[in-house]
Image (cartoon, rainbow, N blue to C red):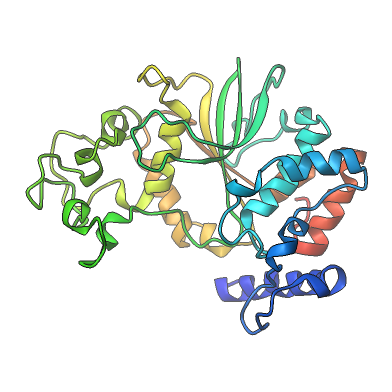
Length: 318
């Protein structure tokens, strides 16, 4: 299936869901090649919640309004999907469902032992010197270690470094524009424009990936796998400024139907490039929503979620 056909299929499911459940809560936008979008007053309706009102409030409160992404009201928002699934797992105290889930590589997707583990949303490590700290979609952490979870749905790629895309009229262009190489340029002292402003990525990246920081690279190796690199750092760099890879990894959750996450897709190529360069076995792992829903289907109290995910998104247990 090509991406356009996949995205159109998802869009049809979303419009059918919207017509059944939210007909009077949508914005005034049209339907042509566009997912349904909830009016600003009703964006919380994008979260799937149980009938139990107390637990429904817990799911809705998992990500406060100020932390919602700009397009949270779009029914194809991956953040709303993430909140619906992981918010329910936390609200029903069913982290145990995750312990036997395997990543695509065969390693545990989460932790083999989830005792004492906490699940939090939109966490910012704050130890990398970033002007805008990396925000982890879902963070599992405890004595067992840390899993930084990045959730995708219809996205076509992982985030890339924005500095090569800066335009002459942009405020930060004179100081931070980059031509895509890793070398000193524009009168800077550092090879990376971000290093020049105090961001610590290249202090730690060579310990995780086969990317030497003390030499030029014609093509910056971080540019196209920027988001995956940041997630790896968020999972492993400690507040003390050291790297700890014991019991720590990144987990990407993706839609198995999305062709961009197959080997020949853009996200698939980014993933393979990061895996090939990674020096730490198991640091990068991924699992499909479908496989995750297979685990959730084993809990009777989450039957509402499994049914709604199929009706709304077309997602089914693997």
